[in-house]
Image 1 (cartoon, rainbow, N blue to C red):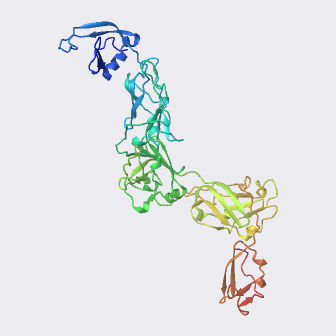
Image 2: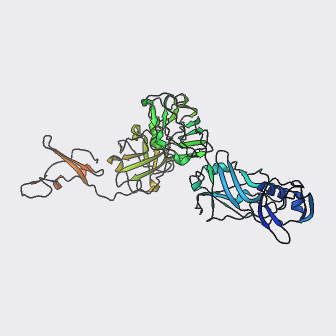
Image 3: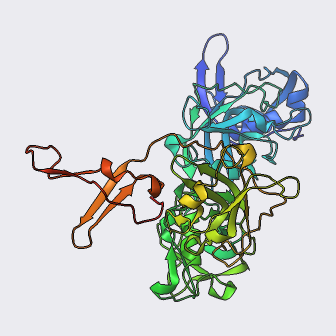
Length: 521
């Protein structure tokens, strides 16, 4: 409650009307009007006394008035709804300033302020995700007045995390629901609806350089690293190829690895977490002396690696001053087979592991297929995959094998042809991950079934290449899939001088040649 007496401090003459009496209308200053509206007397009664001091006005012959008190002066109450005229968003302090056409009373009894009636958005018309409605976390301690000052608190993070609004005047608008705040006389604010949103008059952005404050975590188990900054980070601005892991504050290229294919990151507060791709994990783990312990795990990045939520570039951390990981978690999780697929049409087996494994060192002799999930429950047929060839020797979480004919020939209607008669086992000696953790064995009493139906062998082999060596008297034939060499009918082979036979003597059909090599592709 204000004072019961208000002395005017200024104003101006609005109009003078002459007639049987002279009427002078004065325009009150905003400050005097505010004090009048805050006065308990002015608010509570419909009439008031007006005291005019001597020499307040003079007539046309310069005769000054005497001191006068006018009782029961007419008071017209304020019934106008406050309208939002302008607003300022200050990112640096986390504050929203709303200027109204009339006095609003956010902290008066029975005139509560409801922040959820205010929405910030990217344009006059909001889209599906380019806006944010304030929550009850936003509060105000503003006294009654024309300007409402809102402290955004944790709502600030949602605003600065948005890539759509709040970064300039051109992409910052506001809507407000009627009744979000009231005038001192209880009049609801005028609504500003979506489609007619009010543009900001000023957006104050943070201009302090954001820096890396720490490298809290490098976790090889989960394949991720966390960086902590002095301010909130724009996750959409991360340029992964600008981050480098290195073995020391100042490292040589042989013990450094720059991310190449990682593409996923999250932000929690001021912490940025980068999830490493399989390719990057492989690259890091295969460099001797890099990221083997906390003492060999540092990070550096360029000036274009990331921006903060005020769209300022973060200060770089360069080689020579790289930051050490505070916590290093070694890779101690053993890989395991998540699935396998058997394709009889191509004579191949594909194993998928839970993580990267050392494919070039995979021991196929430690893998076995069997026709029962538990060998103790029935008569079992099985085949050891000795002699299988790797289709690729790249570090991966997938191993694709060409099965030898000796294995393919063991399959029958009761083994290796259906999901219900094909199971896989392997020992811990089969393969290890890049941190030398051996694969989890699959026992022959709880063998793994295939993840998809066995693809039947329905396509004939095709000749893809040949080599005729007259010096050794041999003809080498290369087929598209494993073949049974004993079935080769050499009399069905014709050698000719060109793709199209043009002359009668340009072809020769074999007569008594024999297959020398074992069954294979």
